[in-house]
Length: 331
Image (tube, rainbow, N blue to C red):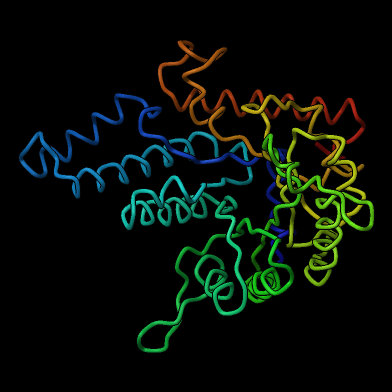
């Protein structure tokens, strides 16, 4: 059975790039030319310039997928993974969910890792249903089974304990998939819960990190890393040091780069000494790079700006790796 951690590390090595591109489309930030192109097609299809709400929803979902596809086409040779955020699609209902599924499929067709950022958590049969839907197989009317979203990995919450996480661990083991558990997130208010001191005198995020290490031991691959990863933000590097010590075999999915002001040097504590163990996510700073400096006005197409943003991010991280002595051998 394929091991997710091994697969992710293989893609990271192939592209010498520990980067994940977040795909979080927002209508008003998508280039006007693409938005009008899709609208004209739907106006023509329905012989009207006043789309009904149902048709407008379909057109919006189509817009999201085309935007994602263009970003993926422009950057897939540079990065190992893409991370669509489920909420941006779910708010369009069934059509948005279809666009999400199509995006995941297209990421995989381009040979990249598809991480679904859905932050699911529940217990028992409900957790099992989530795991089946996103990572495994779903039972159909004739008792056959099929993959639905078929993501390579999913983000999950830890606060219902092992009753919840174990269902995702089982799916990872059974289907060669991965999961990233929220441990120390990058948002400003994260410390309200994650920083609370427990009876052991450790903050809650550290207790969670210890549990993630235990839960993931059965999923370690040939390269020593577990397919049960952890979300550890770039905005609290001192806490990342603690997490790295407590989770030596865990791959960190690292949000907070760019839009939350973290840079290459800030994410170094998330990596192990050999330069592995983390993949750094950036979403809007890449996908909407054409709207910000230093890329605004420099490129004829938003995809060229996105590609340039990825190249700059890669250079920043690899230079920080070299400075810290963590650049992997052969890179």
